[in-house]
Length: 277
Image (tube, rainbow, N blue to C red):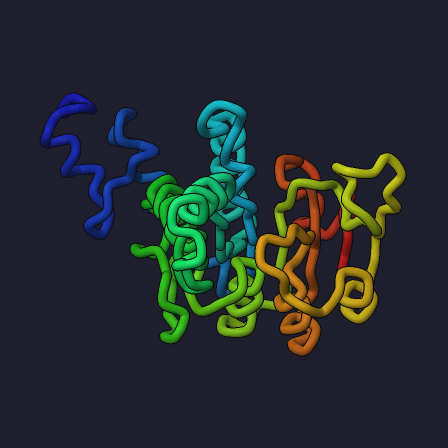
């Protein structure tokens, strides 16, 4: 048996042309677990094809200094288990997080009025792409082989994890999440956000916000406003809310870093968060 870090061993960890990074430095036997995971998912998904769009706020990937490796590892292991044990499919779309305003604000301070809305949008899209490629690499052995950036062509993914980046033609990655749900006939959109619930006012600025457990799309849009405003922070983008309401999708807004709460939501148990339908 070749040593785990030898060239021969690397060849043994290739799965359909993609390197299984998670098991790269372990034993050859664990390669069988990767294959069995994909095989089991294909078998169980025929019986129970539960799919979810997960909109991941890019800010969740970052700590005060660099990436939040602990959270990313927890989320990574959790989604793998859910795909393996439950046969769930996850269509992930991630925003640029703190990288987007970092580049956008610098560009505005330097180029100012010469920048168009499309210029600014691209400075949001490219950090989203970087985050998306990072996530896809972590799930390389059980993920669709490419990050989907072009929404005009509907793909036919066969793996349990599919990763999307932001689209230049949309208002936001929230809007992208709705487009994904519509394109792939998925009813449930889960927003992994920075707050526990959707509130009547920003909980970061006010001490007495009122949380909502359930809202209709009309109630949400009345509260948040129906017009898209660049740089405005909202639990779910108003234009995405309008599209989701028309498509009669269900949105579940939860605190992104509470993985146990996410587990309860996926299992159909009582969870802490806001349902918009």
